[in-house]
Length: 248
Image (cartoon, rainbow, N blue to C red; front, side):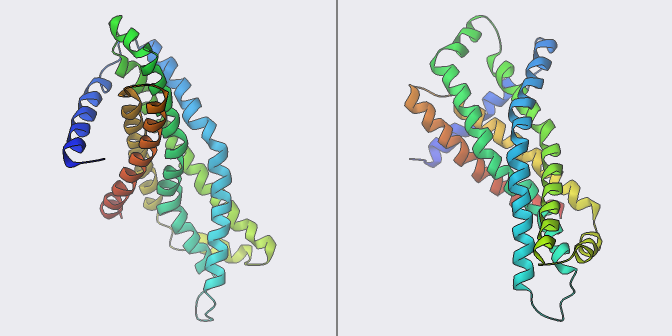
């Protein structure tokens, strides 16, 4: 059961671990190699699910707005305008990162947890390697690097999903074009990028902490994986409130 005392202990251990992680790598060549690998595993392998989910969410948002706004006084371009704003400000950054927290977070926690219980991390420490820096920093840097690309793909896929609704006769391409172009604020796109970078740091560091500090056997690895997803998702939601207030 989570108590204020246990939460403070976890916070202290997390900060201590981050102090070991966020240091200069001993060997830049090995770091770069692992960094590229993590970008591929955590980011590139997530492109498919990002494109599919964003496409259908963009289509659903467009359909729902059109079906629920029937007033003749409402401009027709409001469908495209609202779809664009939702994709830019919330879905492609916050909601997509919540989805990735389940995929990426559980992957990181289970990987590091397995390495911990099989004593691979202990072996690295015995050899004098900063295991936290060697294992975790490439994951953090890799996801932070690839996340803006995933957000861009998500926005583009959501827009394509909205255009796909024109095939169903729900709206028309000229109406969507007018809405997508109306009063476009470029800063909103950068707000999504900034949010996504912060969320990427939260997901990777929290999941790494849960996996790195596992004690026990395979059952504890499963619990750590679940805790990583739940905790990182909650922290992403809290961060979303503050970042939205600050940036917009």
